[in-house]
Image (tube, rainbow, N blue to C red; front, side):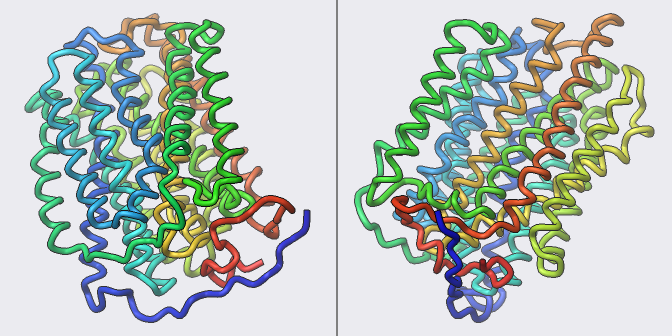
Length: 505
């Protein structure tokens, strides 16, 4: 192997992009609203889980699937959805995603059984798979100036932080006032309004020139592989980690994903240009995204359960107790775009990982009766650390490709985030409820509260160590030269993709 030191050539940049004037910022507001709805539908549900478990007599595994059915479909279809948007048009794909999300939300809200609730969540999850990579691709094409693009990505990430902050508290208010079904039903009119606004505000952007037919075998393999691995992780708690179903799902998923990577290397027009992962910064961004969301979303879900099941708080009180995590996330994400312009992605990403990891480990002192006054600052540091990571991860990933393949790159990054979320909810849930089978809903008694807290400590230890370990793993990658392997073709035009000057190797 040889180091590739060819300079990246940045295309001429001028102004804010093809929309001109203030229009790009209106476009940003619309696509950020789509991200807000997608993220809100994860965090707002976290507070409703105990109530859903009680009303529908759902098991711990059923409640994990209430979160993960949405996220798994979302993660599995992100890459095909991103590539479809590149080929078929970002505006139309974004609007379709919003419409599908609204229909799925309506189905979940009206579901009379757990099975139909999960079916609604599956349909709901198809929406973000289309709208999120489309929204980042729209930002990439609309903001041609590097500094403005960093600010736009930071504001886009802030919308996710606001959803994190508002989700638990808003979910608690909705559950108390209207019932858990309205956590889903309110999405339907919001999605309809957003689709109408997108039709008026978002411009039609040029499609990527297709160099071959859509990679249907690759799409099917990526979806099947990710779904099987996630199935094994989620069902491991209920079926046992050595059960035939879990082992078979792990083996089949790993085998399909391995075959997918090998096939994509040789395909003339691949779904995913796997050679991008030879660019250390791109690989680091995706690995960090997986670990960050593994630790972060799992924390949101199980801290909400802690305040309700262990301390007996109402959904509203639990939502406000978790609120400092999301508020700090939103504030840090809002500033991260400007901080990237000043300090660069590398140091900001490492600072975020280490801060959130240490804050998570500091929560190991938490007990059954610990008040929010003693731990709110830990929650704030956790959220702020994660918020600092968002923009650096996104700009590192998007800078690895040209504008025509921004949908693919953003889809890969968001798939890594959602895979981390699936694994976080499942693995951390297995630790939290390890000694409490069947008690995912309802308040716990004295001995059970101690068992829950012991499980939560195990989950916090895993999360904190994972965040700090991620910083150690990616540090050499962030400063490493790009490496090319002889015989490994590159389809991404990565060496001429407009990498910012500070990333040129």
